[in-house]
Image (cartoon, each protein chain N blue to C red):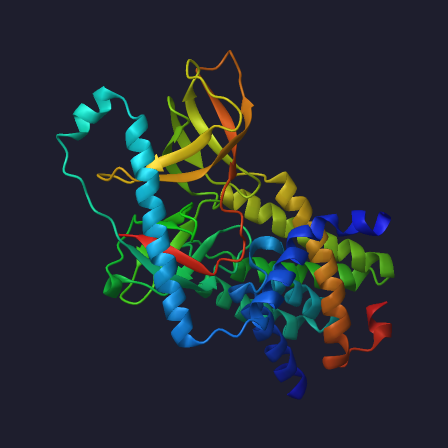
Length: 151
Length: 225
């Protein structure tokens, strides 16, 4: 129970960061999405799926656009990560999973805006990689995830 | 040198951290903030009036004659703050704390404290308004380029573009991109021509625009009524 509350609290803070964007449009990343990847990598499918759907819904609700695809995207990403982790447990697989999830997210959103902003996409990959590394560093002790589980 | 190269993609981010900290160090009290806001508003209106008079000087006789038949509209601005952003990085839509209660309506344009275009209002409730910024992929606006050309400004995450410019129009690098508020002669500046993509096989060509308003931390926005 405490674990789930901590996940909920962490994801709420990440959603708040996405909504307030304290660094404006200079940081090209989506913290909620990174949080969902983090939870999907470190927690069982059921937990990750529930949080994926809840925060996908929250993100859709906070979004100003009429198309609600985050709820489906987050759920599919969680299932995709579970499937790969089920088959591959090597350290390289984690990098592959993380970048595959980011590229899927880039593709879905680029299709949604009907354009491919190359420079923005590159910066999104770089910024998200660094943000995920920091997130992993900060959240792992808080959510009591043993480092061995990450490797 | 290598460390500097690594930091290059985070240039804007680091700049914003410095701005954020320098802002927080300044003790701003409510009363003085209101005075600052009023002065900013007055300054903005004066700068708009100045731009208007410069534009009127440059206009040719034919345009002046046409304008005589129109009723000149007087404009006012309402200062607002950004209270939240769209959570998606692919959309540039913000929520501002001014709505119908302050006379804000759909389609009104927003400028920054230097008078440069920031975006336009796309929906309003009683207390809040949604503002689409000029770099949103769905933003579009008919604009003037320099003195002669016209085109359709389209937002974008990488750069702003102007489409459908007639091939016969003369456009130079660094030409000013601007537009005029309907029924008022106030020119609102947007940016400068950065790159011209000419293709003689097409009827139209397009240009890339560097916007004047490059501050990604939007603190104060003025909506033109």
